[in-house]
Image 1: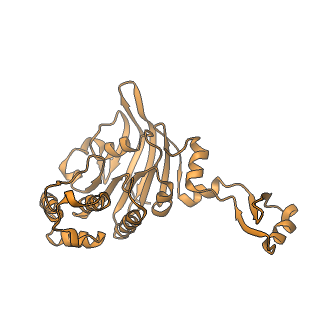
Image 2: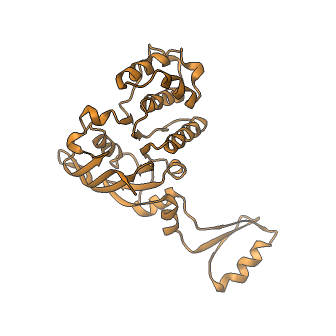
Image 3: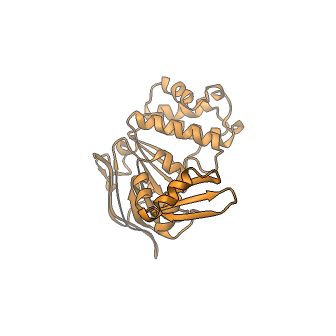
Length: 282
């Protein structure tokens, strides 16, 4: 794996509070990496360090060959696309005029405005004032703003927070397309279903520390139990160890008309997070 982002023993203190405590991870070129955890776990702090908004207290961070000492340089920032809690649009301007300002700032071609609007299905809104758009539309325009100049790395802080399922799915499709074009994406989320759909690798962050990381499917497999759960029409659920001792029972259940569901104990990513951290995703 060719690492685009490398973080080693990263720490951040705000006064006596330690927001990050020895964080380590790498993000490969063209991957989607998810930093997962509840509010207050350190996700946004990590993102703000990597985008040059916050200085580190200790450890090292490197992105695209730039070290943390260079994160404030324009040569670095121009290679990034950023969607953060500070991202905004000018409500009194049209969608097109908002994107035109950013296009000129980053030297992107004029054709890119039409391209990105088509990408998110908002070409018909190009001449509308931003103040007239829904929250979901504004979020899609903010992502357009972040990808307008074809960044090498895209940083997204909670990209679909509080959006409706249809808009969320549309943004997911867009991000997978961008990834397919070679952009490296790092996102933060507390939505484990989102991470399962999007991410090549994830890291579980809790109280400023990464407690486990890896590919979502690998993490789910590593924390599963060796049990089969059988649900009957009466509502009774019986659990059996997957073993030779229970072979006949499980084979009989496959053809039992009173059985309405048979499933293995294959945890969701959210259930794995709870096992690892002991915390709910709130």
